[in-house]
Length: 274
Image 1 (tube, rainbow, N blue to C red):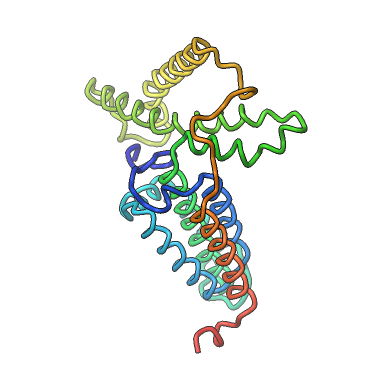
Image 2 (cartoon, rainbow, N blue to C red):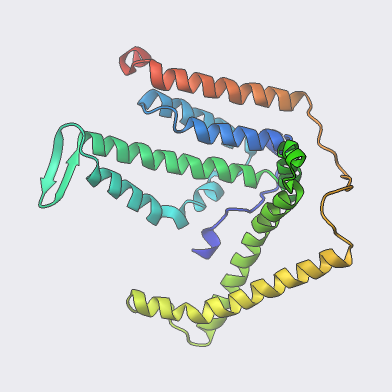
């Protein structure tokens, strides 16, 4: 399960998506995530699926690597589906037993919500797969730059987010090493009830927290040794500049959002099919 967590990881590849300006990918991902909640019909989901497939093909990130990141959130998806399935009481009753009732509206809402969550995770993961932490830091700092005028520490916020993303795969690798070391010493991490499994995690969590604090202290000392004092007066080795492909990407994403909202909200299903 630890190896299946891919959030925060960068997948190196030579694709158009990798070469885009990080600001384009941040704004495009935000617009894409917002668009998932602007429609509630089959045509809208079909258009979103086609768009997502196109972006995955362009990114050159293996689909198996993307899907692997969904395994750790399967339980969250199941809980969301079950809550929407049994607690939504709209439309005709399809199934009823004891306190459990499934209606047409509940089934439709559960399916739509599951698709939205899956597409949300895939879309946001593609951004981290195709953007390095340094690029993310620069992109966030540039986008939030106007907030500097009202004394918002934009550079520090971007730096914190970048460090957090960078530490995710490092801590996951450290957790995997600690678990293997504990298993080699005879620790049983699988058997028993939930309380026993929770207790068995203590020998993992304690050294993990110690390692995390040690890494954070080493990072702070390294930054201080390099005379890091925030973003004021700092220059960039690679300043961000928009080019032709970035403008095309902006137009494509905006056109997709407008088109999918029109198709998903205002075009009836029978007209879209025929």
